[in-house]
Image: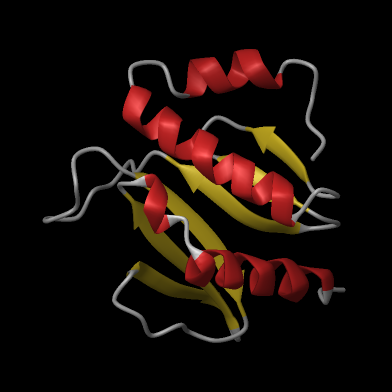
Length: 131
């Protein structure tokens, strides 16, 4: 997976004061790097974005927390052409017709499982089909 030269420094700044979430991201990154070696990653102000030709997934610290969400968690977001109905989906929104953004909250590395990776793979393929 490719990233900028300053990726490690930007990553450290992004997760400053959030060691558990940084460890969750490290576990996610390892899985993403294995699954999508040709992808790229960028640390931005509000999220860490994953790209093929287009954006296909993100990891972020939740800013607006809903009641009942864990205090320490990492949000993984991905887009698909349909709404996934699953208890693990914390939020799903349709910002454009037939483009659903899904958010999953991670609290432990074992939650980065085959189901989550299948959704990310599908999002990767969905984003490649964009014009």
